[in-house]
Image 1 (cartoon, rainbow over the protein chains, first blue to last red):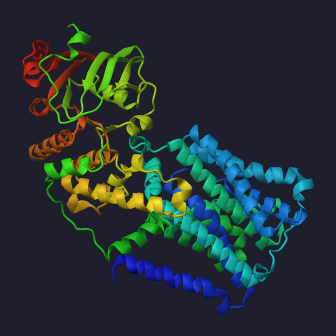
Image 2 (image 1 turned 90 degrees about the vertical axis):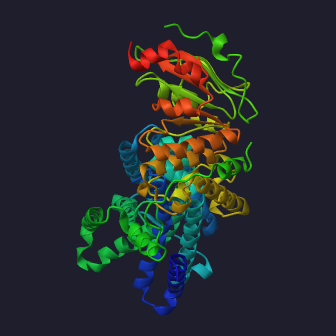
Image 3 (image 1 turned 135 degrees about the vertical axis):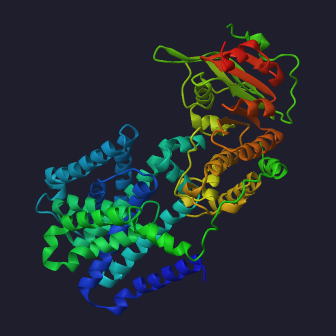
Amino acid sequence: MNGRTLALAALLAFAALAIAFPLLTDDRYLLRIGSMIFIYWTLIAGLNLLVGYTGLLSIGHVGLLAIGGYCFTILAGRYGVDPFLALAAGGGLSALCGLLLGLPSFRLPGFYFALATIAFGLIVAELALAFSDVTGGTVGLAVPRFPDPVRSIAGQYWFVLAVSAAVTWLTWNLSRMMWGRSLIAIRDSDVAARSVAVPVFRAKLLVFVFSGAAAGVAGGLFARAQSHITPEAFNFDLSLYFFVAIIIGGRGSIVGPFIGTVLLALLPDLFGSLQRYTAFFYGAALLAVVLTMPEGVGALIRGAVDRFRPAPLGHGVLRPDPAALTEAIKGGSR
Amino acid sequence: MKPIPAADITPADDAAKGSGTGPALRAVAVSRSFGGVRAVSDVSLELRPGEVHGLIGPNGSGKTTFLNLLSGYYPIDVGRILLGDDDLTGLDVQSRVRRGVSRTFQKPRLLKSLSVLDNAMLGGWPGTRAGFLETALALPRPRREEREIRARATAILEAVGLGYALRRRADLLEHAEQRFLEIARALMTRPRFVLLDEPAGGLTEAEIESLGRVVGAVAAAGVGVLLVEHHTDFVFRLCDRVTVLDTGRIIAHGRPEVVRAHADVIRVYLGS
């Protein structure tokens, strides 16, 4: 059994377990945790393309989550828009705001850009408080339910699972084909990216829009899962959580950040009464990973998979074949 | 020392020898200053398809700066860059790559966490048409492009001699392997011209020999090569024409045997 089939088998086993989960338990609390993990993952999967692949450090995505959440709640609740349509609209609005969030990244180098995104997250929360006639302010808003097949707790879980699987599939496609290589080039060497004609500006904006859309949809699902939202619900700890989950998972991996998402989501629950120390646990987890495996959980998994198909070791001799090279270059030359 | 007048840039004796056809890449009276220092001063040079053109000169003579002007990493102050009738002067790096001007770097710029094959495939980017959404949805076009680029990258890597390392991470490569991989990536962009920035730097004699064969094969495919080098023996052996820079100016230009015997060149390299 080689690495690829092993990975596929693991994925199928996990998918079967995730789908069957509501049949295995009717514990509402467990189902709720399951739902929350996949809602968070919907956002983190999109954010991962931005942070893990393109190397743009956004810590402000909770703002996009809030925008998506309020958009969904207000459209579906106050104006009676079909909830699925409202969910998509939330994604659309957050995509647009993601574009705005991304614009400073073209002027500000990494660290300063990260600070600007923090400001974005805080501003959205303040605006939600300030425009209390729209958002309900500190009193908040009741979030409408989805119609029937998705109405029940299990239905909601399956819907969330499907949405997050779809987003994961999209990011996986992007990451494994030419776009993925070009995003990593932007992350690792802007000079190299330009030398192969990667449209750096456009690529960054597209990833911002994509991650914004994912965050917006996640926001709608998040709001529904809360059933009542106030600006408090979109507190800054969440943004930290998203970011740390990706760092723990490792750059340039999808499985890694997913594991990070699950671990960090379960951590506060494992410690029960210590929930108010959540931020402390995020910090401790981050420190532990950075110190013991700086390349993240994803690198560990990749290492394990590679053991099943080791790359040949030792250095060969560079022995070019000029005739073959001329032929290979000409193959479809201009 | 007098710069060679532009009219002499194309001496009658150097008839096109390469197998290439198509437009030439020309720098016309190009200058560039940093602060008060003229790094490149009134340099004119013509690269022809299928020809290997050497650009040599002592440290700080402006060779790499000139390469950066040609490829678009620095804007030029005065002068023009032309590809046939196409004016590249105001274009960014990416647009020049798309028109067929590709390059490598003195210090190879590879994506360290990716495999050798992935690094070479990155060079296939200019040939792709599949958009972001198309790729996200894994529609047929991006998948077809992926297959084609993979096949071409594999062929080029095997031909430059890296066939044994396709799946190896780029940061595990030895120096010469990194250089060859970067050349492979540049070739993946389907260039008309490749600009190589000191490709022989840090290579052993045997590796330089291999590099010579690679450069020869590139020229034989009709691609024009600019070889910016320190290693003058290598340049004189390999190049069809050689240009010598000193303090940003051209001091000699022409066939290797002529340039090698040029009094100013001897003075610059051996001291007066």
